[in-house]
Image (cartoon, rainbow, N blue to C red; front, side, top):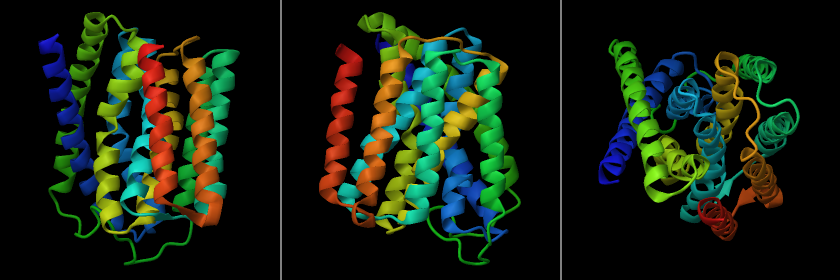
Amino acid sequence: MALDLAKFLLGAFMLWFCANWIVDSAAALARRWGVSELAIGLTVVAVGTSAPEFVVTLNAAFKGLGDISLSNVVGSNIFNLGFILGTMAMIRPLATHRTLVLRDGALLLAVTGFILVSALTTGLSRATGIVLVLFLAGYVLWLMSRPRVVGRASGPGLSRAARWWDWPRLLLAFAGLALGGELVVGAAVGLAQDLGLSRWAIGVTMVAAGTSLPELVTCLAAALKGRSDMLLGNLIGSDLFNFAGVLGLTCLLRPLGAIPDAVPSLCALVAMIGLALVLMRTGWRLSRIEGAFLVLVNSIRWVADLWV
């Protein structure tokens, strides 16, 4: 058990470290096009911080571990909107606005509902993957076609200009992600056996928390700098990319089929997204008390996933 835990922690550290490289270099490269802060948070930073989920999910799928593959994505999204969003609001209340809540938040709720319906009916097939990938492509193209504000993009990872070494650093970071993902998946299977827990329980809690470290670090930097748009854009964008990108591509390459254990957690995620959107809509602000409530709800969900 000690060896599995050490492998898990090492893999999680590698995922966090390499994802930080991806966020920093990718955001600096995107700055050349003068993309708005919200758009960068919803796309470039979201994709970079979701890279660990992609590596772990795809790795598990090709090993025939569909439960870990899906539970990682579902658990990461719950973790993002519960622990991370709630904690950031407790540090500093977050200003929200109509576009973020009624456009991007509503799209996230719709995509999650679609995946829940797919899990209940046809399973997570290639057809599901095609729909998700096409949605993501259309959403990103639409976002990037919006009016650009040259020189206005700022926030964590956006304070410097792009350098020649950003491209090779991106390649090294993705190689490190692959190795870290391999360690995390292998350790998760071992820990589940050591602790007598299901692979789903380990995936939706420990693995999800490990792959969500980049979102946590990025959002903490944004919260301390008062960058609500970057923070909220990163979390909602990461959740969208986790489902439409990570899960969509995984289903295309390796359909997951029906996973009965996923339904309760997917229902909980739909409820969590709805709750977060309602709280962000009240006064167009997420207060410290509302943030603490999100953390409490997510903590209860974690206990239920592990022990019920």
